[in-house]
Image 1 (cartoon, rainbow over the protein chains, first blue to last red):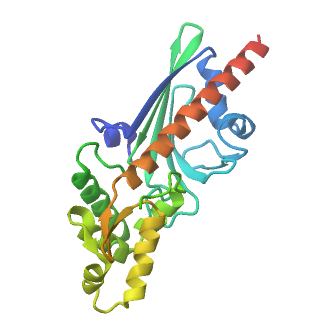
Image 2 (cartoon, rainbow over the protein chains, first blue to last red):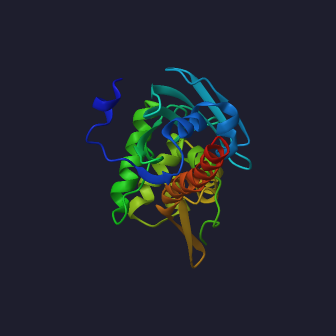
Image 3 (tube, rainbow over the protein chains, first blue to last red):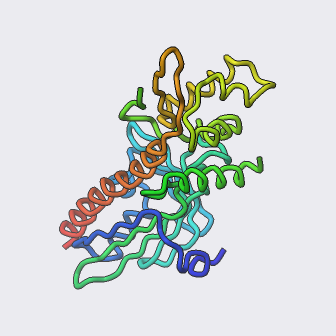
Length: 145
Length: 111
């Protein structure tokens, strides 16, 4: 799967941008080094920061998140799959079913972090019928039912 | 009777993973229906089994129930899905704020 092609023109489900007064290299290390990842994301983190490598992050009183790194271009761009450990393949938020892209752009001495999370099952605001149809269709496709 | 305010997100995922429950949601996507009428759509399944599926959907916040005389009318509740979306969005907002603090602290101490 080539990322630029796979996601070009798609609407991210969730998009967030944060300005950080730290270099991209520093910010990058907080995504790829287990002890640094555990400082902000979860209480426990396992990370193999290489293409195809897995990560597993346990949030205190929350779900365990797992995924695979798809693309690493340090310290600029990081793509990984995202799901909840306990979910079966036909359930929403199953491991591998959603995708997160993080870009780090230098801004003076700091970094602009942009995060886009794709493929989360969602209802479309103001059109709940369409929302249901879309999620039920996605689920049927996922389960082969 | 509506869903509890805070529904565990894996309950939503679990509820949606079952074919019978997805079929039930389709039936009540546009129409509010009583349990008996819903059960009639699943002739090979016992009435208690259908009721159990409806309970799972209710626990996950995916259906709302309205009493009507001695009947209970079921309807799909799309907010159950919105809650999953909100959960993830809030997770990123909260965690990225923590990432910012941690990265800035490290940057300062390395100077």
